[in-house]
Image (cartoon, rainbow, N blue to C red; front, top):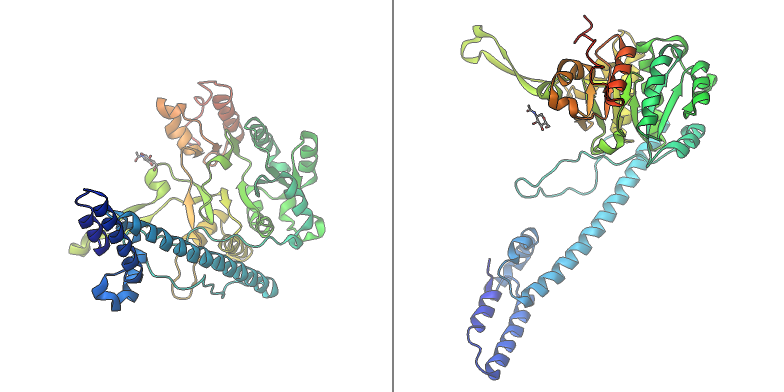
Length: 435
Ligand SMILES: *[C@@H]1O[C@H](CO)[C@@H](O)[C@H](O)[C@H]1NC(C)=O
């Protein structure tokens, strides 16, 4: 796009014959610069320079083409001052976000409810051009509050890597699986793994095997569930305990014990969402979402109703950033699990995460991401699909979660044999399902 300035300059540079002409040209260019600064929109529309200034800010990158050197110098200066403006605004915004987060935390601690908070970040903005606007999905982290649990804070300081940690809850009922899981953690070279021990048997196991652990004090109000509960009973508890990790400012990768680690999961986390979770889906559609068409022939012309479907997120392996929406999710799930009617924690976890606000209900506003289903693989994918496909067999997952099968221990051991020890037929003896 050639403006009045560049037209003048190119007209002047037509003939280069002798020094007088060159001097004349130089003077012309100089004058051009002066006019460009004084009347950026051209002499005849100078009165309109206010609105022009705004449109030029929006489209300055488009105007680069065809400009002369003096115009681009002027533009560089303008860009510089724009950048200075922007970074000032940025600092201001950051400060506002910090202030708001602080206020929010204070309010939360005071009356224990963040539900009716309305948080508005910064000044209103104009929307950018088509295709360039992106909604906020990466929420700011909360201010770490060590007073929530100083003892846990000390442990995390030691074992977390870049404020991230894997947490696995275990009581003695699941010790055999924990052993397989822990040995795979060690083989994969993952240092930031913490066992949340629910009884003394697990504490002893951790001490003997040099595994980092944390056990709550009996007077810290832990449910009796922790001591002798099975898999499902322990599940409700974990949402309460995880809250403290987030309040301390750590990102948590919650891990069940029926999981074999083959690579370090933190090399494969995106960190752009409040919740990042593995899926119970068995193909791209079921894992990542699809349009499921419901057919009611009696309706004739309107027989097809479109529905949104996605297989549930697995509440045995998910990553949470330390954000307000992630903490709210934990609170909502823990609260619902502590009241009748009894519910399966995984169903509650998904309902809270996905159901929108509607009359009488305020939905959670958390950003979410489904993990890659071949890297974070469930046992249905492995036994129904992957083990029968020569190409997929060669892929190395990050984890395999034996969530779809009740004979967890032998299948976990087979996964170790197959992926770590190269035993090609290790997965063969098992049926696709539980038979
Ligand atoms: C499934 O999704 C992955 C990741 O988005 C993609 O690379 C792959 O091509 C998809 N496979 C099929 C069969 O659509």
